[in-house]
Length: 246
Image 1 (cartoon, one colour):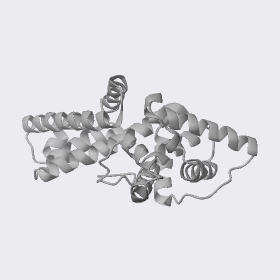
Image 2 (cartoon, one colour):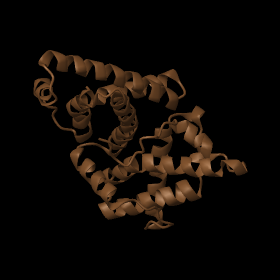
Image 3 (cartoon, helix red, strand yellow):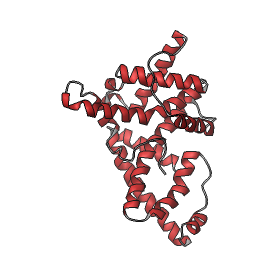
Image 4 (cartoon, rainbow, N blue to C red):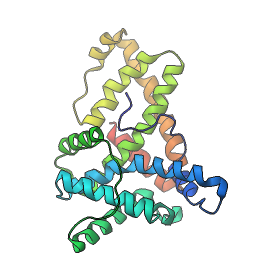
């Protein structure tokens, strides 16, 4: 049920990864620095690609720009090393950086720089998501896609929780009822239909939904709490995630 190439063992926080990138002066920190950079690029290129598509670039131009942004601005020029937690959310920092990058590229007339290898199947999936949110503005799309990436981290932890307790049907039922429709922007099936499919009575199925939802919220609070600094930021991101899953 995992998607978007997010590793299941991605358990560290976003700002912890940013801090790890700053280990350049520590000879023992180079491995951690590279791993942190790779993880951040893997996590955040999809929202940037979608932002560019929603800004009017065709697929080829958006791919070229996102490749250049991460290869040149992020990997070569150390964009994440310039991020500071006390100045606000990482999402807003990346959003402003990509706006500046687009303006710079427009002045040059073309993208340039080294390449970042993005698998074709992942680019195809991003195209599908861009199409599913056709009415979203670039900023709205980036915000939603950003949250979907973070939701995937929460989903992975929750799926692992129920798998370890040998209750995969609990998770499968909730995933099909709430997570998959949120990702695909589709209508959810009825709880009664899913209860029958996964071998629960209607009453038991409703109880399963509540159990999994409670665990998901607890995991979400933990993940979001590790990833933000202020109580206001934490509450805002939790509110956005809950709105997505409503």
